[in-house]
Image (cartoon, rainbow over all chains, first blue to last red; front, side, top):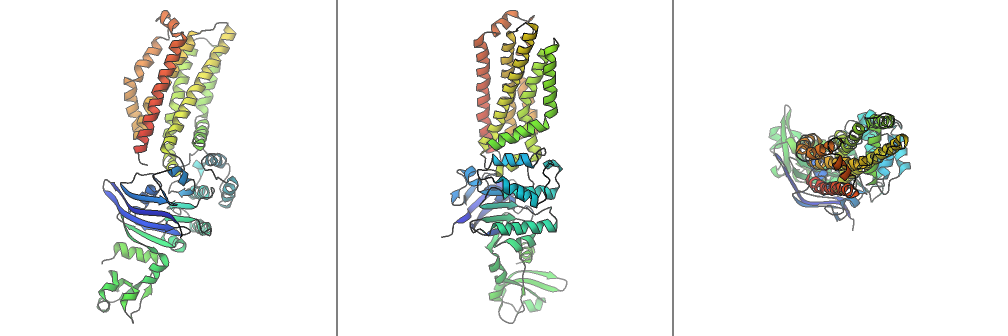
Length: 282
Length: 213
């Protein structure tokens, strides 16, 4: 049986003005899951709860089969984390960062760290405070990939990166999961990156998980119908998940297998799926 | 934990390099000039006591505080690193002052043994300052913590500080200074300081566990 890298059951956390409620999903080993959602949907809260940076109100989080409320520091030895801001002290240069991380991770690989730093063209002598935003993110990714982690948890890792570097990072992440024991949970606003990377997609909206499915299943299951309001009435109502009116007619996200024959259904992208789910009318 | 201590060591050396150099130079000058040793001892004690809080403030500014939450450290280890750094800086301060006093004594052929008692008091006050500031800062953050820390110091630390300053002058109470030279009094000051520091350490761990990053 394949072990799940992450198992989340009925996870809830309440803040003043926001509630993450009853989230459940599994990330199978060797897979990449994308967390998609608008700002404030609960992506970062979910990630922080997984990493024990926030205390959950209820539910459970298991990482590699172990409850994250026990021995989390041992579990974290096998997790590489990149957050939207990398919190390295400004006065440290690569040499000191390498020494600090060697004292942090049991499996720290200095050689790999320096080779990634070289690949990312990170300056060896410059202090972290003088790095550009792109360089800082690259350093965060280099740290996450230099201790033989089995799970990467990435919160907006490609934000602030130019398209060329973003592409490099995406390729590197794909490389990482070539080992079937390695998994990635990634949140990003750049859905095109997720579409390229992910095996699974989880949609969060206003603190609720509204969809969590294999990407290919989603793309095969749903499609877009662009037609007039009159033509839309001919489609079985149960096939229409969401619809929106445009100046040129109606666009609807439909279940392919319920829509019936003879209807022209276009493929849907993950970005369109997300926008329909968040903005479309039922 | 090694990584945390190493990070704090690098930040202390790199960020406070100029302060450390000035401290060292001033202490060396006290060997040759009379009358400034006492002031410098207090100055150095205050510098040492402020290191853990300054490091905590740096952690907040650089967002290391949040980043370290994603690294394989327990909250107890994150708190403990600051208390250990505080202890190391206090001990380093004692060693430097002791060395300067011994060198000065050898040069002037006047060993002022009562100074060692004052050293114990300085250590005690330094520990007390950190013991008051750190739990509040771990719970509320350094900015708010500083404000509450100042208020708390007025009630807790200031009486001890005034007490130690008052006993500084030999005109104030020569008998008292003599009594302070008693090894048991010195040991008691160090033990009480260490005890309060240990309690504060445990309190900070409990408070930081409740704090969410």
